Image (cartoon, rainbow, N blue to C red):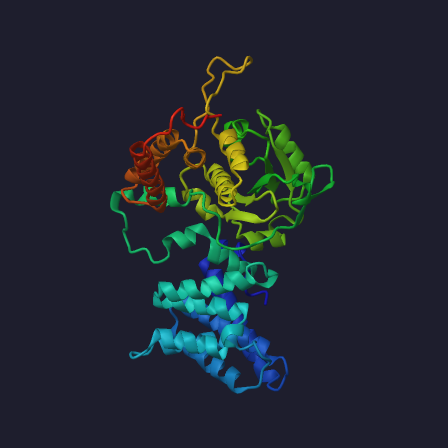
Length: 468
């Protein structure tokens, strides 16, 4: 088993060492199979040999290795093995079947799932089916098995590596993209979509213990005080400066509802303390140590990449659930304030939920807290003080509240301002986005209602709803 290197170390292992490990695993497994052909747990060794041979096939295009893998897989399926332990063998046989000239990919993949238990298919089987669909370029089939897996197994500790891959923004963005997509807007589109505020489409909880520099235990989310918690995983206490950029964003929030934490993937408190003392400008957020460093199970759960320059970001909702986990791959390519985008889109969701249940007072409280109508200069404000710029999610929220209050004029003003901002962003990447479609629909609906309001006769002594 030691021949198979766990992520993220696998991603930094030299190619020749990967090949050597696969060859070593193959040799050890062949020897074990020959020495103990009737062992009741031989399926474990067979699975490892099949995985090693398929690794050689993938890593260097070794067709002989793949043929040996198929032969081993057929031998494993012909032997008696415990239910559910044949996924690796069936995956190998399915890949062989997909290579036939007259192959029917959908039928092969569906038969694979049927043999794995159909509706009761295990997490490994669903993951394998989603990968087979990726191999054949069937986006709908991949999404079907991906969705089923995430709905059933996203929080299963034995499937953390698979979950981290399936929800990774960078991988999701580039799946099924044609080569050279977007022309000269290639980088703009990638940066835009990797920074949007949409949460990950999996329900995942988070429970972890960190250490302070003094050795005290900090439990998250228990210690978060029902606030948003943004954790930047860094290789050393020197950090990468990413969290510092959110100081003005936090200062502009109407309440202190966001915790920032730098989590060091090195549990040497003395080294961390020395690096913090050497900083010319102290951090305005807490620094905690991850027990075990890069070997902590959290690394596998969150798909963390141990890079020197790329932050790995985890955003937890106030209830402690994971809003989104962003790997170093995503953070190296996103262009925007992804933490702000995630939190503010959730602000808008809360307003929408309040309006949906008819709680206008709560919707007004939330909307006008984040988007005040008047912003007065504080007595102790610095000379360069400027009013807070209202973000697009908060403008849309206020527009919806104005509409519910019966003030279509004010609603239209906010909706139009939001539309212009979103339209400008869409123009920058040369494509219509879902956010543009939604904002445009909101603006047009308000325009329609405003027109109907203007055409209707006004009752005597009527006046528009008072604004806060």
